[in-house]
Length: 273
Image 1 (spheres, rainbow, N blue to C red):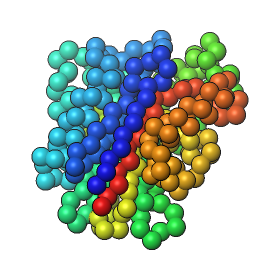
Image 2 (cartoon, rainbow, N blue to C red; image 1 turned 90 degrees about the vertical axis):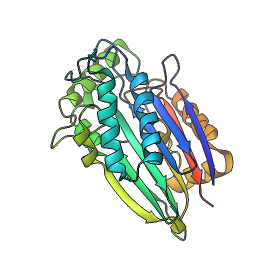
Image 3 (cartoon, helix red, strand yellow; image 1 turned 90 degrees about the horizontal axis):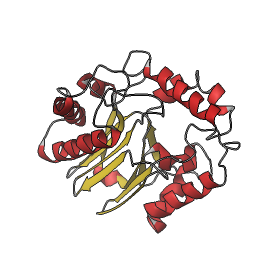
């Protein structure tokens, strides 16, 4: 097996993504940041949260024989216990994250996806890869993003509209009819998309934060097949370089309206023998 990993923070901000891998498991988290002018009720912040949860999940996947759903639920509960004495975990802006988990055993590959990071499986013999993404947040967000998307990025007005957008989404977080992320409630793990595929059927897998997947799903500058080929030939660093090139060519968001001009971008590319 071969694992290649790259992560790059958005310019001028701490990295709120996490990625890690061992010989039998990989995990990627994309932290949900707190917009300028909003608070979170947490003294530690999103980078701390994703580091704590990501490392806990990676250890759990290697040490537990439980399902990925169980590992995620236990991880959420464990991290909540690390800061519930110091932070207001009932605050709607309490740190949270998307989750992608992948575990390979002798005969199977188990996967879990919660929220809008992306898992792409290169299935042997298939013309197109298998793409798994939980798009419930995007569905909710469509109701609120029109005002933000109509404004030039990084203007005072756009910053205020982005803050309002994120705060509107908070009202739908981890609720029926809304969307689910890893935060405080371990029951969110039950809402994750999960599956198992025979190990011999998969050649490679890509785990992508939405800051890396935007080359395909927002910018439409590559197909999923082309993205896998790029990862295979040139690695995650080149994928992220192309994302940054596209972002830099559309600083005002006129071509691709988005909440963040630049986003943290993280990719894991795992090739199986």
